[in-house]
Length: 287
Length: 317
Image 1: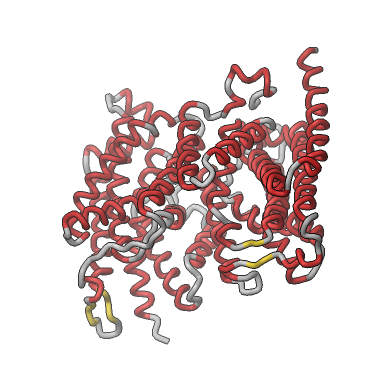
Image 2 (image 1 turned 180 degrees about the vertical axis):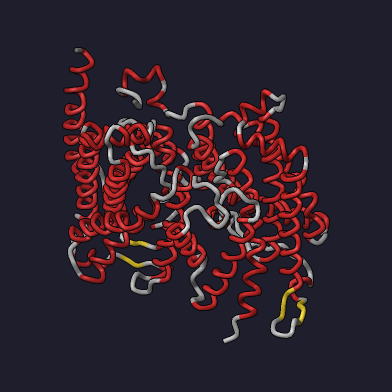
């Protein structure tokens, strides 16, 4: 048995899993909102990419900026129009709202697109691979890993090194105090939600290129994204990437040992981490 | 004094008249309507159990489908594989789901709030996948109820209804007793402020544990009777995400943290469903939309609305 290719492919897939969780981790870390509709946003982005592709005939990779921009706007509007009104003492109210939203979006997509399986067509790209001596590595997964990692780097720079990022971190620490410094925290929240939606939409298009999706596949992506957040732990932007790698490797190794297991082994890894390290890889504090 | 009288006699009186109505239904309704009545009672029971968890214990579980489906499979496992009678199956549905809940609780209780909600959901997914992979339980294609062969097919809807009626009456009685007893007070104290409750001498973990296990067991029994009455079970129906959607809709719209809330919610849910019969997709869109609106405008649901308080009793304390 040769395990190296499986593990390498797991790492490549894991980069994408990390990106699936990044937007969720950002929103949860800054605003304490657990967005249950996260999976539906992923699937919506994939469908939006599909429609744009049918319209333009371009490779989905070239459509990424457009999709990201549109979803940035959607996230901004959702935060301003709905979620900002629900921030308060009870963290379960936004959870309830996003749960309702996820049910709505999932079934709206079901009404619009039917239950058929879709995939984003990226031409010959999925069939090109590099010979690396001990394993063949697909070019598409490599590109996806590169985009995922780049997204992490850009977000870390924006949050860690810019004035905007400083305001975001200050708002996360205490939104009452930043208000006294003249920062409009509800606008910061809206921008953060916009950024999170843009990242999630990029993840959704990339996922649609790698694997098939239906209007109903959002739930499993949402759970996977939450596993990334919990396993990664709060307090570091790199935790989710590491968690993504771990989940990707466990997923593919699990599938190879036990072919019809679906996401069973990533789910079990989640419980294993809860058992031995409930604060996650990078966790500074337990929620 | 007036309110005391109202509460002391109104609740038992309503309970007794409800029981009389339930006992009369099998003689009045045809088997189709009796099936619907069975479903209403079971969904009401599941909603009340979710309410006990989310409304009284402050444990927002999004994975109740795990216990509903598991109860169904426990009943099918015991009756199909061990050839035991359906009543043993219903008992097994209660015992097995309560046991599993007791085993998983220590792990899930490491999570708080939103993390707990997601943890229960992941747990439901794990159970779903394991059942789908199990050949003994029929795998992904499911299995029929074999016990029906030894039973009178004409009497079967009446038997299912009777089981559902006994369970839902028992669950309602149990829930109304429990929230007035020490455990209920402890749960509400823990929900409102865990730290203060602990410092008042309440064992926070134990109170939550009891609520979680009891709610799982009764939901399991309800799931067992539900899938018994449908004569067939498969993993996608048993562990359907929409179980959670339905329970959440009923409890939130009716009024979380009140005993009457789930009853109101159940009536609204089935009313809307009958109106939108054959439009399952749009019905779900509507339920999601109403949940969003409820979160914005009325997080305490209909029984939390001031002008209705007189008719539906006290609101959430």
